[in-house]
View 1 (tube, one colour):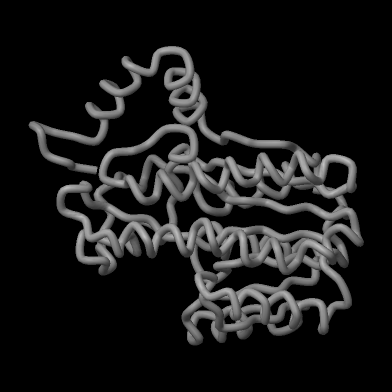
View 2: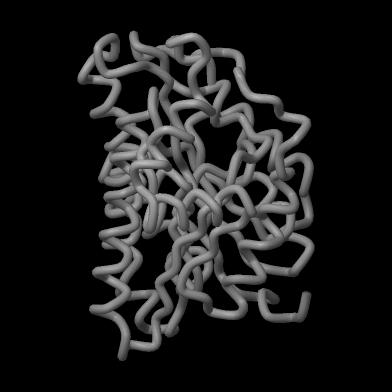
Length: 269
């Protein structure tokens, strides 16, 4: 990678686990000035102790709170005097069929995955326009194709992508680049932290983590895409295949997705 990120002010939401933490680590190597948040104070403290000499400021924040998002943006601007890149990474998944899931679970997923990005972006926008910066949304294949057992998650990612496409068009002549990236299944904490039908963390992943892209590889690809000022990136072959099939052969895609997630009529993944 080049010196593109050196001294750039980058906000990464949800920087204590998975892709978010990998992004923070990669950006530290690149010499960026980083601001990150998470809900767990201990994990943020551990991040600070791992990188004592880095330009890294952390804050306990829940992105579903508009006030927390505003405070994160204000604190970042106060410390670093501007913002170059905002990576809306914080997210949560779910695993429950609609017939079993509480509506509150869907609402919570929507508040974190969609409104969290809205709150942070809205508050950071003047600073990003000022520096002709970049807004990133970490989306998912679920932003292109609804996934069974993850109806709220799919809705949040569809909403995120539609919203980002709209603001990308609004900002086309401002110098600000708006992009969304779609990792495939990535080895991260998101499935362990996925909400079950009662809205509690499921605690174990039903997926084979050994066959997935690492969070580090995913983070590197996101940073390359930011540097190239891409519009969107679908990262895996399986992801590209799914997007293609869903666009041109939607009925067949329904059957294939059903087959992937279900075994003998029961949601397995």
